[in-house]
Structure formats: structure tokens, C-alpha cells
Image 1: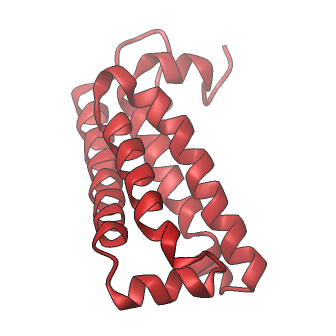
Image 2: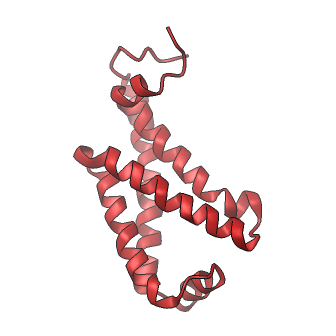
Length: 135
């Protein structure tokens, strides 16, 4: 079923979008907190990606701020765009060091697909901007 971009989303679409967005928020919040707590395995992983360990906490704060912006209805679009840039950098970092494609390199793409899809399902403004089917 293709959704009509001029109609408000159905309750099913809204709840599916909320669930998708909740998964994104939970994952990114966990990732941000792990960077702030900075256990050894996080520092080692960031070192392997080529990031100095003194950037772990600033990256965690940045990700936490982006996640909060995405979670708040008034700033969802801002958070979505910033998240796209942040996760695009993660994809590039993994690609640069030759990480496995489907499990590491594309993981940011999977999260972004959930994030954009969640907003698309529940917000008609995004559906009007990116319709699945042209009239």
C-alpha cells in the first residue's frame, strides 16, 4: 500500500514510525553513553578507527546532543540531518580501514534507514518532500 502524501498518516503508520525511531534513539543513546563512560573496549575500537582517545567523550557528547534533537518533535528534522552527517562519517571511517561491509561499514546506513523511515511514516511533511509515488 502506497501512502497518499496529502492525507495524514494512519495510526498504524504513526506507531510503526515511532517504534522505528525509538530503536534508533535507544541505540544512539547507548552508543553516546558508552563513549562518555569510555570503557577500554570503546577506546580500543575508536583507536582502531584512527581516532585519538581524547575524542571519545566529545564524540559522545555530540552524539547525545544529536540524539536529543532527533527525539524532540520540534527538532526532529535538525537531528535527522545532523545524524546523517555523523553516521556518514562512521561509514567513511569503517570503509577507510577495510571493516567488513555488511556488519560494520553499512551499519550506519541501516540506522539511518530506520531513522528516516520512522520520520517518513509519521510526518506528512517528509512524505510530501520524498513521495514514494508521483501523482
